[in-house]
Image 1 (cartoon, rainbow over the protein chains, first blue to last red):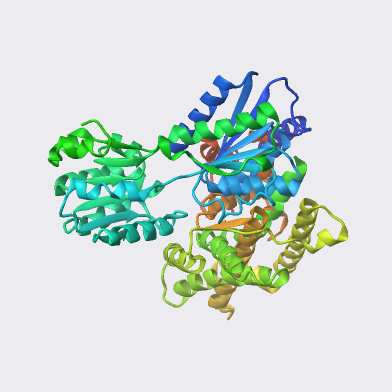
Image 2 (image 1 turned 180 degrees about the vertical axis):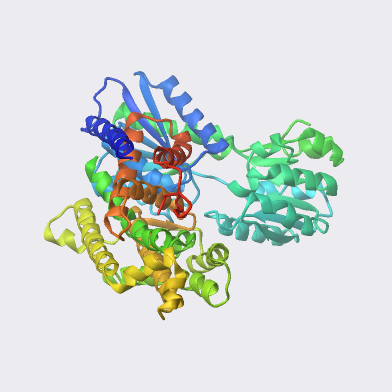
Length: 325
Length: 287
């Protein structure tokens, strides 16, 4: 046992020594170094990262080295990674999502670091204290845009007698309660009742949505990690019920949702890359770049033709959405 | 890098100290530390009008409340402890949402009074955490050398012993779990305050962190006597390993798997066939 203890101590000492050897003010390199931080693994985040890297690599004159840090859902690990990013003296930090952006801003401010931070896909940056230029001199980014009015205007086109829409969402996702209220207001103006169904895990979708789907004329989902992960379940339920599924993210159409109105996730990465480019090439301070939403011109309808054909939606109706049938 | 390691150690210290009491000494599957970690933070953040010491106490009260519910379910309603902890997690998941009102609340980190002494914000934060950590270590060290500390350890080994000698096991369990979860609640608040936001999913991964740190500590300090050195060493080694992996550039997609392998490797490295009289505890460490 004493020998085994020595072995373990040796391993730990080696790692500690390696760690200490890695200590220092960070590596010096002629490459521009960009850190990418995300709180967990998600297909949308991967696409955003891809859009960001692609745009920056294509447009930036010098070679760029990207290092991606993923919190794997653990705040402790994310915090360690942010400390590591702070230690390594990157030229720019790109953060995806709320947790990584808020944590990075906090840690960097405490350490007095001037490294520019660019965030993306945050719906309410002003609520999180990220949009205030007077207190956030080193952080700027791209705000998430949502246009429920345009999306929901498609409802009467899909069914002239639309009376009841089922909203399946996870209220524990930041901003979705406010989105639900917005949707409710819009629908009440259209004399359509909204029936919200709250789910807290992807596995609950079938059990909860099934009870309410019989009385619904359509199902609507928000940009919601929990529900979007289980969109296949909703597609099956809607298919059985013969009603359309409307989504706020375009990727759900690829899985069978009838209709979506939104932007390609890559666009969040692309637009953030443009901000990063401005900072890296011209040396503009993030303070001088206001937080901006994606251009609304990037929003588009996307349809799932087989599903719409099954629902007997006419070609003229589809054309009226600005989409080719 | 050392400063980052120390800061993280100080943030997680109350959590692991608490887990040492309930999981190692009392040998209870105290999964409710996940809820107490979150609820302590949420309750303290909700009372944002105050600052300083009262918020620490509120965080402890929040965490302790979770422990109280779990231990009362176990001791008075005779619900198996693991089930009681799981039920408590479910219950407080809803309560947290009700109290917070929204999944995430961002706030300006409270300023440490040490800033007034001329320290930078980061140094002041580290200093405040060091003071809190030192106080907690002293409190735990004191408890562990008193009758209460011995009662925790005895309960974990043989609850009947306490009954035979007229010591209320209910009192021991409830006190131990409340204390453990109160510390977890405090740790949650410290973490939220350090990062400037609290969110309902921040408890994810804390149980695995505690288990890994405590297994490493128990293996490195093979003592039967309750001692505060075990969680301290375990936590230090855990964060050193984590930092080492980050520095070595390990693909962090595999971090959770690697963490589990470290635990498995540590247990296997010290595996020995146990005699009929020996048994291993919840962490797989032989007593």
